[in-house]
Image 1 (cartoon, one colour):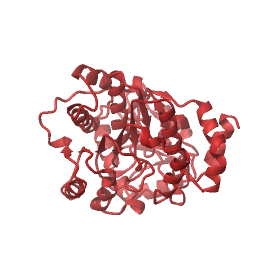
Image 2 (tube, rainbow, N blue to C red; image 1 turned 120 degrees about the vertical axis):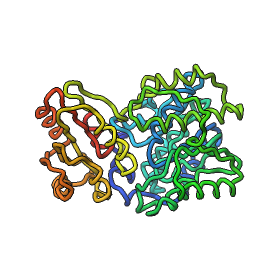
Image 3 (tube, rainbow, N blue to C red; image 1 turned 180 degrees about the vertical axis):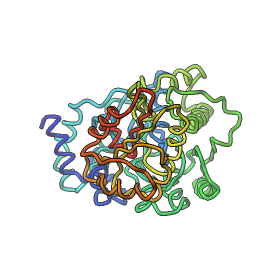
Image 4 (tube, rainbow, N blue to C red; image 1 turned 60 degrees about the vertical axis):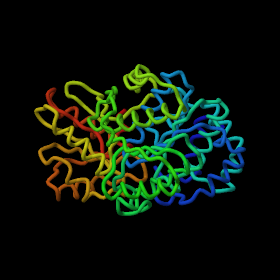
Length: 407
C-alpha cells in the first residue's frame, strides 16, 4: 500500500476515538502491551518525559521539546490528535515521521493489528515508540491521549512525569468529579520518579499528594514556586503563562537531577522558537488580519474560560464567532461562557462525532447566543470574513476539528 492507501486503511479499519468516540475507547493496557511485546519492547529503550492533564499538555509538550532541541538533544515528540496530517503526531526535532516508515510499519504489522483488534491510538503508540527507538533519540516527550492510568502511553518509565491541570472533560470515561479525574491522571506517577503538577485545586492537590507518597515520588507544585524566573514564549494565549511555569519547573528538576544539562539562554531560545522548532499550531493562532481572525483548539469549560476571557479583552468593533463542537460536549456547561453580544456562525466539524449545527444553534438560543447555521466549517468561516469589517474580531473554535478545517 502507498501512503494514502495506508492512512485510509488505518482510519477505516482501526477503531479511532477522534472519529467514533466511546466505541473506539479501550479501557486497559492489554492490547498496548501485546503490541509492544510483538515489537520487542521499544519503549524500554527510550528516555522519556510523560505529560498528562486536561488542558495545556500539547503546549507543554511542545515547549519541552523545543528547549531540549535547542540544547542539542535529538528529541522525539508524540502528541495527539493531529490537525491536518496524521504524521504531526510523531516528530523528531520538529520533523514529521516519514511516509515510508508509516507504510512499512503497517505493512509489516497489518495482520497482527487486525488479528488482535488494536485501536488506532494503540497502534500509533507502538509506531511512535518503534520510530523513536530505531532513530536513537536522546529523549522523548510523550503526551497522554486521555486520562493517564489506562492510557496506551502509560507503559513507559519516564525520567519525570508532568500533570498540567485537572478540569471536567471526558467525564464518561474518567469520572464526573475533579477528584476522580485527578486519580486517573495521577496514574502516570511512577515509583521513585519525580512528578511536577502545574495547577491544582484543593480537591485535586490531596489526590496528587497521596498517590505521590504511595509511589515514593517527589512532588513539585509549579504554581507554588515563587522563585521561578519566568520566561515568555512566542505562544500568544494568556493562558500559556501557566504552561510556561510548568515547563520551567520541569526543566529545573531535570537539571538538578543531572538528567539534562541546560543554560538559561537555551531555555529562552527554546521558548522563543517553539513554533519554528516543533510546528505547534492552533493555540491562540492569528490566521488573518483586517479583520483579525484567531483560532484556538480549547474545547472544554476549563480551556474555553481562559480563551473567552482573552477574546473579550480584545479591542474590536464587532465580534464574530465560528463555532462547532463534537457530540459528547456538555453544552449547558460551555455555552453560558460565550458572550451574548456577538454574531454566531454555527457549523459541524466534518467528522462522525461532530454535533449537528442545527442542534447547536437551538441549544445556543437558550443562552441568547444568536446566529445562523452553515453547511460546513469553511462556509461558516467564509461568511464571517465576508460580514466582518476590518476593525472586527473573528474567533474560530469549539473543537480541535473545527480549527483543523480553517488552517
